[in-house]
Image (cartoon, rainbow, N blue to C red):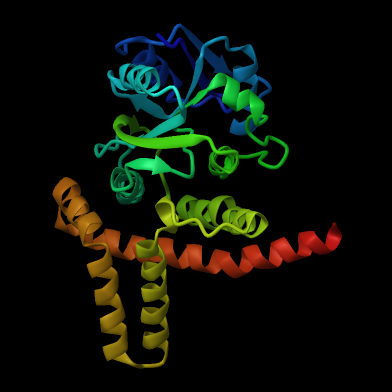
Length: 303
């Protein structure tokens, strides 16, 4: 039996913390210890998770974001996975398809995450710390999260997953490991996150590592979707309606399963709005590519 240490970064004193902890404490096969990291105030999640890991004694570290209400079977599934596979280094799950926060943007954003993770089950080359578990000895061996580089919420978990993979550690995405996301998203927050906190640093990370990763949001379907959005906008600007309609149709075909999920869970009106939000999401990611390349080259010149 593997012992579990749950670590919840809460340095920003989130209003969702009570619901998060209640779900952890009431879960099946609950962890042997729970660390809620509140200090230092306003420290980034990378530093907070590392601080909790330094105090933990469990065989497996289970990171749970403070704005997630886990499902009752999460810890049981994690225990079973590590008990059944001695070579498994890390495991992560996804949001469920019933986001708690109101609003079209919140529904879209949380269901997009759910869909991406639910359609990528199995071996992974990345990691997600929203609900993610790592063997403590493996986590310590690679030095934990890079808190110096990622002082605010960013892609610190993705970078950790890439380092794990680079040393031969095996990671698995188990879509059964789920939790309800309680975070409220605004449109401005979505664009800022996609551009500044995820897009640019992700491009830099890929250039540094010379990686050709096609994991999760980097899958070819997502890259082709970004291209379709760019062609649609370019066609409209050049007054080529047929090309624009064809490119927009390609976007819908490539992502029909996601749009069907939106329609099923939120209705046709929100599904239609979701197509526009999805296009904006891909456009922001595409714009982040040249910005990330520029920042990477500037950093190289300084070094």
